[in-house]
Length: 216
Ligand SMILES: [Cu+2]
Image (cartoon, rainbow, N blue to C red):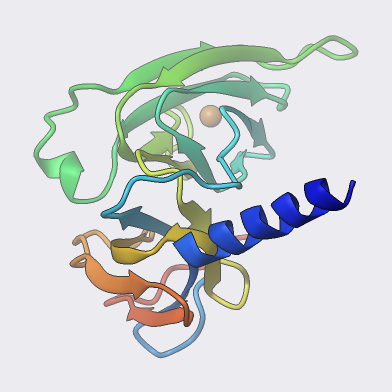
């Protein structure tokens, strides 16, 4: 019993020595915190995170909006799109950000979802996200509908909190790159370098835009 306890303590110490905290704050052009930006950390060293992204996610179409507005999923995730409105919607997925000008529409997807009949199950469709990067969601019928899915090829990825923060507590020690994506920041920000280690690494990234607010 005592031996097992000692081994556990050793294990905990070893884990702590190999991983550090990276804390990223995202601000807009005016210096205000930005929620729902995506922060991706790519460590140079191999490792695993204790907080993997869920391999399946659902986006609803509700009252003419994509809910949630921004989904963060791992590469290969299975996305389910559900139309909860009583009228027809489309789901058009295309490369977002700078990639929309270079991809020529290749690699996107399209679904057509009938409206939800009164008292019956909503219609849904599935898509496997097999390409990393941001995807813009739209609807052919309703031009105002806009949403995003960010497909991360690194398991260290988070959406920022209302305070604009993403805190990673288990980044392998050593050099790492930090990428920040936000829906209205069309020109990719340069990746930033941090060093994960015994003392927490803190980084502030400022967007070149003030994100537009979503109507509620
Ligand atoms: Cu629609």
